[in-house]
Structure formats: structure tokens, C-alpha cells
Length: 273
Image 1 (tube, rainbow, N blue to C red):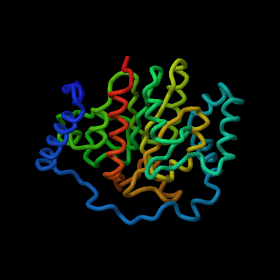
Image 2: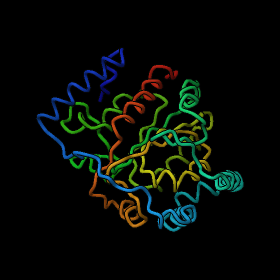
Image 3: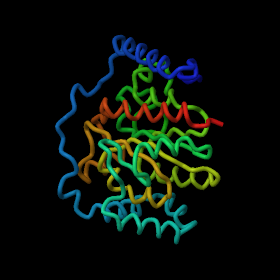
Image 4: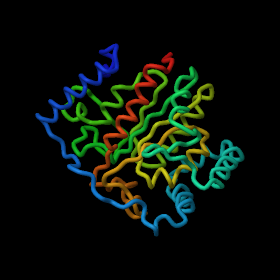
């Protein structure tokens, strides 16, 4: 299947054509969307207590078949040292509005990293931002991102994936934290000659809980904060990790613009070879 952006030489033309068709698809087949952002509080005070310990416990207790631990044990001292260094920081990230920066100091630095010839970019999307009508299902790592599909053609995930170059780019659709942890380790181990960067959407709770694990893996990147029906308690997070997530999360409009700007920079300035 040809991605939409491949039909155009100019980013602005491709995006304008996508937005026009998305508006038409919305008229013909409107999706269930958030009419307005709910006024939900952030992480509750009780949940925020001992969050790093809760993260460690969750990763160990829920690691089925030791899928993550097996990778950690390949270089235990290296990963332990990175994890401890991250734990000693007040926070495992720097924050720039809805962008959580890991291993980098600014968005401009991230853009410069994208211009390197040895970069492999992982672009991930949390399943909870998939529309209810998603033809691939929500709690799954599948996504058909068909630009001609009545749902995919008006989905922000579909738009992003269709904008991605097909070389040196790995799109992922994330059902659980262990899924993305396993995938990241596999990608890093399978691409020793590459500098792996990431751009991944997630709720604020996930970005805070598991930032140390991202730092432990040694990759750098940006976590994009989701809004809407987010997880703000451990119970909500636990249910979400088993696919119980009736509410939708979204990337807010201003952050969509910033995220697409990074994808544009990657497509136009990364050496796609």
C-alpha cells in the first residue's frame, strides 16, 4: 500500500490533500470523538507516592515469560548503571509543554539528531488514542493506516504514519508498557550501527512512571503527552494495560502541529537511505 505522502513531492501539498479528504470522510462517516477535553486532574496525590517503586514492581511482576528481563540480563551492569543514574535525577525527563524530553535538552537538539545519517526513528502511538471504530481494533499492535479507509483517513495516527518515510523508520502501535519495552530492546540490539531515537505518544502517568526505563535502554527521544480520558490512578492504569479503556485520549491540536513539524523535519532533512 502506498503511503499518502509518497504521492506528493511537497509536504504542504500532501498535508493539505490529506486534510481535505479527512474533512470529507468526517462528513460522510463521522467518528465518535471527544467533543471537548474533560477537565480531568493529573496524577492523583496517592498515585504519585513512590511512583518509581510502583514502576519497578509493575515491570517485574507483569513481565510474562521474562520478555523484558531477558534483554536486561544480556548487559546487566550496563543497564543497572543507566537505571541508577536515572533514578538519582529529580525527574527522568525535561519538560517542554506536552513534550517530555529524554536524554536531550531541547526540541532543536532532537531535530539536529534527526539529521544524522545513522539515525533510526521509532514512532509509537498508544492504543488508547485509536478511534473506537478502528478497523484493526484498539487493544492491539495492528494498524492498517489505509489513507482511503473511511476511518484511517480521518485518524491522526493514520495521518502520521502516512507522513513517515519508509526507510530508517519504525512505526509501533502500543498496547502495553511491556510491549514497547521489549520492542525497544529488540530494535536497539538489532541495530548496533544506528542511533535509535523515539517519538512516542503516552499519557503523563506513563511518561513519568517509565522514563527511567527508557533512559536505561540508552535511547533518546520525546514522549508526547496525551490528553482526554487519561489514566491518573494506578487502578485506571492497571485496567488500561489489560485493554479496559473505554475512554479516548487525544493529542491536543497545538501539540499535533508540533509533532507533525518533527515528522516533516525527519522526512525532509533525514538522509533516508
